[in-house]
Image 1 (cartoon, one colour):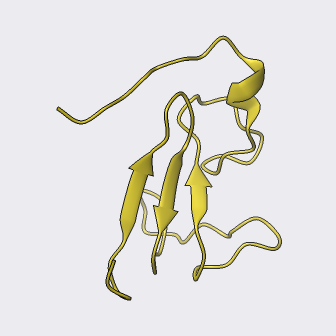
Image 2 (image 1 turned 90 degrees about the vertical axis):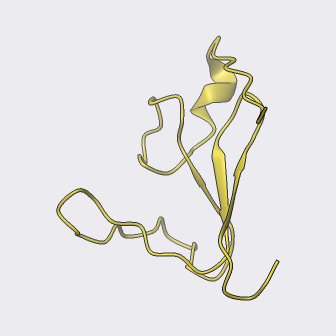
Length: 74
């Protein structure tokens, strides 16, 4: 992975892992604040189950649910 490349990994039955320099904005262009201790220079995870208390970021709530959307590229 190049230093300026962003890679998004779909984790099995879990979140989306974002690795690389990124900026996350809402539909109006407002930048999301990262949870405390997170920074734009390390991997973050985005919620796919919709139940995270820190949306759009993942707090691992999906592990407590019967939520299992196995997703693989074809």
